[in-house]
Length: 110
Length: 122
Image 1 (cartoon, rainbow over the protein chains, first blue to last red):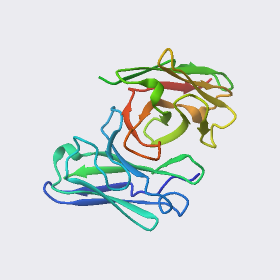
Image 2: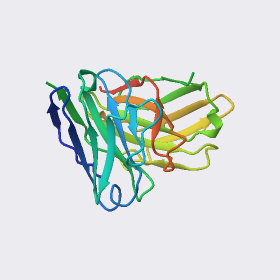
Image 3: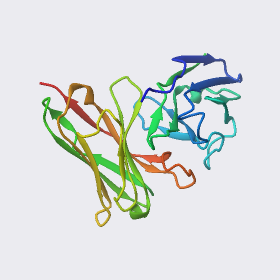
Image 4: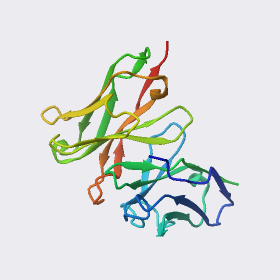
């Protein structure tokens, strides 16, 4: 069970768009449309931002969007705001009926 | 209001045992799949275990299989994690999390507790 691969860090200026990738295999990301994304601020519990690849839970801004191509899922944040600075984690259901997280990406808003 | 409150963390020696609890309120606990997720200090999230709504089905990460046992008491709206043969690498904040109703995988979480710290050290 290897962690999904995410870039360690990404950055962007306010108002810009950024994309965070999440690469797995055909046994997880590529095999199921069960990719989720979480935002975690320091010292806080994670918050669900995207589920089933591209769906937003109620209350989540439409600046957050998700997609998937092959074994790679992506989270895009548009109109970057200072409050978006946080760690972001992807997760995927796997063929072993377990869950795999990505290693996490630190987003810095310049 | 949905609340998940973990307890039972602390300092334990390698090879020791600990039982974590997660008291749930504000929703129908007996209808929800529940999970444990951990996060080592300064590190990423790692899924630990899952239990279905009536406790008849469980699954574990390979790193804890055979050492940890997840269980629940629906009458008490409480989730448990029995941790045996603890190792230094089990040191982490342990979160309980509720499965998000609208996600069909049963492995997506809309509510998390505040976490309880487990430290394995001599």
